[in-house]
Length: 259
Ligand SMILES: Nc1ncnc2c1ncn2[C@@H]1O[C@H](COP(=O)(O)OP(=O)(O)O)[C@@H](O)[C@H]1O
Ligand SMILES: [Mg+2]
Image (cartoon, rainbow, N blue to C red; front, side, top):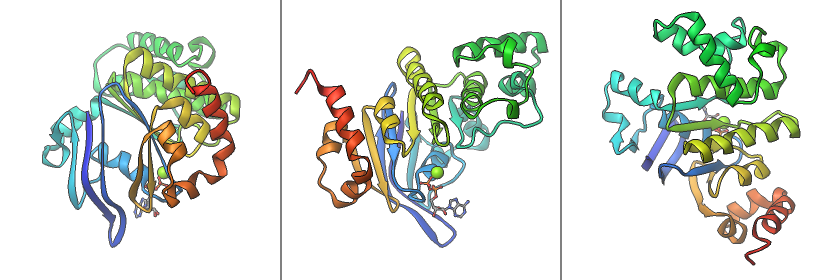
């Protein structure tokens, strides 16, 4: 579904990604972890074709993004839902208008029809359209805003791939839990290929079965939970050190019957 092959990327003279390679198959859920500034958001921008690698290739459905014309790129982006780090809702539009924005801009559907679709999607993300549809984003909690952003991505593109950048950062544990549940539900029930960037390790374990750790722009780990737990690479060990305890907790929960 998605493949990065020997990708080098710099912003100007500042190298960000070095020889990054990994692939994500359809239906998979993968979490990308790593310290702040390690290049995680940049990876998502490359997958969307918003940035272009200086060398190496990014393939979506086997096609190289670098070779695509703008029109084709837009087609591809339609199949990818992106939830940006801060939710990035339009402040001056209502929740319903935010969710229906793509249809408002790009189709001739009546507002009534769009509004109905927006209500359905709000229901999917666990919000009541009657309650929140006419509110402005600022009148909602951070967790609800994040779910609206996910709803907007779903309605815009009917995506086969969802990319989430730090979907739970800044949320209280309950709100974070709801967002994680939603991401998991979309992955499991709709088979949406999922890539989430997070350094909330507990959330990472709920969202994915495979983990990619980036350090200084390089992939230092790519594998499953137990391999991650037992990994002896010093950069991985250092990155995980603050989370060891939650790690062991999850390990006990996850593998209580298998080990
Ligand atoms: N538009 C930009 N122009 C220049 N440098 C950038 C830009 N965006 C990010 N960077 C730099 O690239 C590095 C990686 O950024 P990013 O991919 O956002 O990291 P992460 O998401 O892992 O925190 C950081 O050092 C950041 O300061
Ligand atoms: Mg980031």
